[in-house]
Each structure stands twice: as structure tokens, then as C-alpha cells.
Amino acid sequence: MQPAGAIDGWALAGMARLRREYADGVLVALTDRDVYVPGLESVYGQAVPRYAVACASAARLRTPQQLASVAVHEAGHLWGLQHCEAEGCAMRPATRLADVDARGTVLCERCQAARCAPSIAPLPGPASFVYSPMYRMDFGNDHVFPTLKFETLRARVSLDSLDPDWPEDDDLALVHEAEYLDDLAHTRQTPRTAWSECPVSEQVLTAQRWMTGGTMKAAGLALERRGFAMNMGGGFHHAFAAHSEGFCYYNDVAISVRRLQRDGAIKKAAIIDCDVHQGNGTAHIFQGDYSVFTLSMHQENLYPPKQRSDLDISLPDGVDDDAYLARMRRTIPSSLSFFAPDIVYYLAGADPYEHDRLGGLGLSIDGLRLRDELVFEQCFTRGIPCITVLAGGYAEDWHETVAIHHHTITAAQQLYGD
Image (cartoon, rainbow, N blue to C red; front, side, top):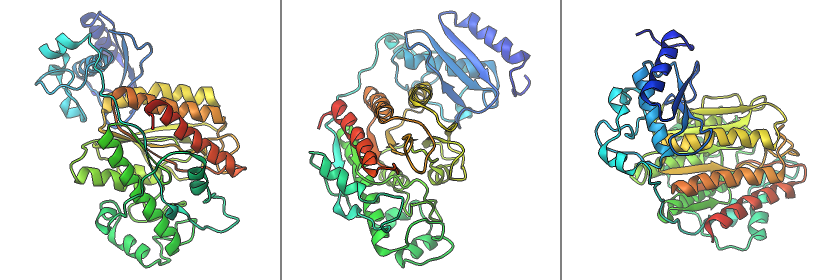
């Protein structure tokens, strides 16, 4: 068997073989590039029983048997099956190529019996919210980051919120390197902190540390209640393990993921980053880690210098609501079905907005609301806990940034209750 590269003769023969063996509706197609690290992205054309379209990366799935295994696995999710631990079953979770073999083309007796009975996720608890007045940061009157947005948003909504927990040094050290943390502890201007575009001040660092604790607290609440929680702050996705970047010092989402994994609360997490800027720090921190799936949907021709996420959806300038939402519908459901995370972290950035000062996409406020609803519905129907952070937003009128964040809260409350 020749190694696979682009679509070639053996691959087409393999597709024909699959059509013969699985004539009940499984269609397999090939692409000549990796879709994401595990090597598979399913695109559900019509989500009806016994029909699926599986796009397998020819660079990773090298035999027709492997393609067959992946195709049956993905069709199983459409039949309503969850992952199965039975030896040889096609629904066994496969996170590495070595886990995919010819034995996976068979459904076990349990899955055969359940194939037409969709699974029903447990009803999640009500939405939870975390906030503290300590989130206030002072970048100066002329700074593009509207630091008043946190307290203004909190004052605008009628809901109960919980206080964040203060993250311990050991929590921060799960992600960040010791020398960098020592610089932050002593508010030192060094090559590691000089990448930041905001002051290296005790007030700013304290606020971001509280917001990191808020993300940790919200993630715990989402898991506990099997539902939705929001940190009304956070989303510092440009912070690397060893240096700051953008407006970010502590990578709150990465720290929260590692804390949950350390405590045994989760094994796998998915990060869906819909800020207009790529989450380059987050992508770099989790590169090569099969326990964390990173998806970044961002404007390509824009800051920052890009790192490789597991799935980068790089958008051209000026993308409108319809094109943006179409890309989401083709990727979010299939990514969650295949990776099956224990929790989803959603960065609901307000900066894809058409009037944002630092972005160049063309989404309306209504389009951003539909974006939020899509992510929440996908998590809700799968019974996956979802924790949301605000991330960026720099509208010409900063009150519009607050309004976009408010719509995110409303979308969650309408689905989960409060």
C-alpha cells in the first residue's frame, strides 16, 4: 500500500470499496491536507439517520481500512451513539492514528441495539455567572481597551453573580514558567513582560489574576451543574507560557483547563475561540496535547503572528454574517462530536463586529447573537458543560461592545435559564 498524499488511484479505489461495503449511506471523501490534529473533520450535509459525509485527511489516514473505521464512527454519532468502550467497536474513541484500525469497522452488540435510539443528555442546571469589582483595570483614558465594560455590563443585567476565587501560585505555574511569574510578582519590565501593550502595574496584574480566578470558578460551576457558566471577564488568549502579549498577562483559560485536569475533574477540554484575533498563546500552550482541542475562528490578515491551533478557521477581511455562520455550522458540530470533550471553553469575543476598531470582519450585532446561540445549542444538546469568557471588543462606541456581551448573556439565559 502506497502512503497517501493527495487524492490518488488507491484512495479512489478505497472509496469505491467503502461504497460497496457500506451501501446504506456512508460516503467517504478525501482531502490532501490535515483538517485538524486527530486527522478528521466530519461535515454533516444532512443530519438524518444513516447518512454522513466524512472528510478524512489523506496525510494521516493511510489505508481504506482506516477510512472505513472513521466513516462508521462518524455515522454512529448521527445515529445517536456515544463513545463505546467495547473492544473492537467502531465507536471506541480514537484520538491518535494508532488507535484506528480495521477492527473498528464493526459495531458491538450494544451499539447495534442502540443505533436508532438517540441518546438524551441530562437536563443541565441553570446558568451561573462570576464577577468581581476587582476586574476593573486602568489602562489610561485614551487606551483602545474599554476597561469600563466589565462593571458596565454587570450593572446592566439583573442576575445574581458569584465572586471569583483567588488563584494560588501553584495554579498559575500549571501553565506559566517560573521566571515569567517572578517578573509579574515584582511588576518588572523585562523582555518577558515587554510584549504587553498595557501597563505592567500591580493594579492591572491584580485585576487579571482575579479574572483568572473567575474563569476557574465558572468552569467548576459549569461542571458541577452540567450546564452553563460565564466569567464576566477573562479571555486573555494571547498570553504565552513564558511571556505576555497583547493585553494579556495570565492565560486564564489555559490555567483553568490545567487546574481541572490536575484535580481529575476532566480528561479532555475543547476551546472554541471566536475572537477576531487568533488565540495564539492558547494554541502554542496546547500544541501537541491530544487532551485539549483548540479551535480558533479569526481574521487571517490581522494581528497576531499565527500559531497552529488544532483547527484554524482563517477568514478573509470583511466576512459577513451568512458566510461566518456557514463556516461555524460546517465545523463546530462535527468537531464536538468527534472530540467529545468533557467541557467547552467559549471565547465570545465582541470584536468580529463590523464597527470594531481593531478588527476587519463584517458581522452585525444580530449575527454575533446567532453565533453565540449556535455554540450554546451545540453544547446544550450534547450535554457538554460550557464556560464562556468575554475576550475582546473594541467598538467605535464602546457601549456597543457592552451590548454585544449582553446579548451573549441573554442567549445563554434563554437556553439554560437563570
